[in-house]
Length: 215
Image (cartoon, rainbow, N blue to C red; front, side):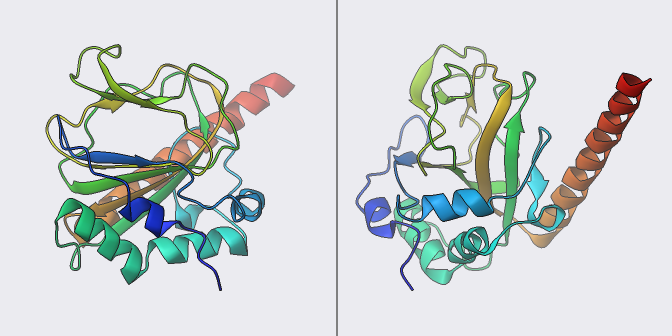
């Protein structure tokens, strides 16, 4: 069975080392694989990040996740970032929608080692929602690189105290898979519980909003 991921393209993309380690790989998810993955992508109707156990998805998306959790996938990142990830657990969340509140400048938590974002939107015309790698934590216009969240593009970076990123406001569908290697299993449990609580609260707020609309 052919791979859905272009690991050779990843291997051939140089790592940028300043002001923090990162790389961007357009079409990391192969073009011929994207229509099936798009069809099988989790139905996420609300903003926020959702652990895989909280969503339903089809076989093509499941195959993509299986490849991302393979030893080969881990090894190419170990080689690129010169880091041993063999004993580090992974954590995956998905997004389907973005709200105006999303995109604030941040660096990711210290418990995350490598952050991988894979964008599964077929195209992107809006000026908002384009992730910006930044030189500081105070200026969204101090841009190193801007990444349109489309076309199976991969963005990966090593988390550091200056790995600043964010995006201009956007509200609407915005599909992204986030994969992290983290420091230990306790992080995975804590983050899953946090995302589960957040998803439940958002669902509850949505139910109340629907009731008000009917009333």
